[in-house]
Image 1 (cartoon, rainbow, N blue to C red):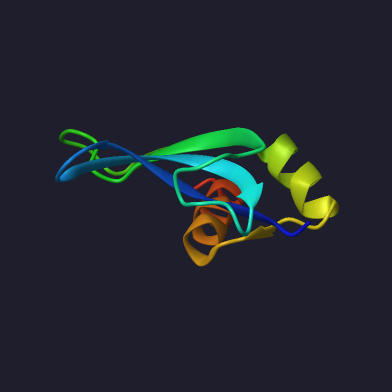
Image 2: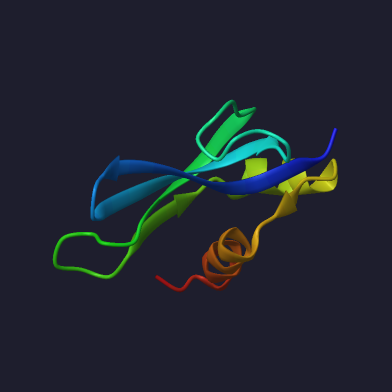
Length: 84
């Protein structure tokens, strides 16, 4: 059972919003997931991209072997540094 921490796309056409989820690596992009651990909105109205990450849960899932994708890894690093 290989777990990934990745983005799940939501929103409308030309206006994406994402959930940060822990899912099986074989699951579809918008398919079944184990747990939702955050949000990411790259096109927040009139401001910089908005994201929230539950670092306690991220740390737990990484400790049991979940691997973040490159984009999620970048968001995690920004959250740890305190950059918005």
